[in-house]
Length: 185
Image (cartoon, rainbow, N blue to C red):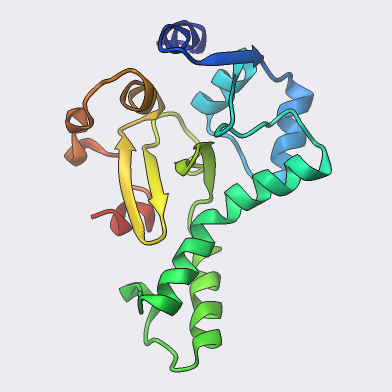
């Protein structure tokens, strides 16, 4: 399904859309936030930008909105660090956990900076920026609770807004995303 068809379907689910982003706006957002939109999300955003409180306002470069989107981009790391500190979370690939909490949080942050960046889609739902190809799964991220919320962007929209059952996700078919897929297992 192409982006225009997806948007028409989402409008039937009650979503509203602003005009799509032009190439300059896409490039500015990618540069400002140091992200790279996967092709399927980029196509959607260039066709129409979902509007509403929980959607990122990619076109708005006001200081307030830039801070808001940066906070959304930082949410997965902050949740991870919260669980490192408060719930003793530690990923097996990080090696031995430092006894000093600040060192442990610094080590977790360094590891986090090496995994695919998550791009906010809606609320605490995120699409990995890598691999840079269509069809990445969408994850629901709440601290260390990371679960797939769609095999891909199209299925995610249907689950989140179209009353498609979450049970339709075929977990065995999810594209593996370093760290994020492991965390959700």
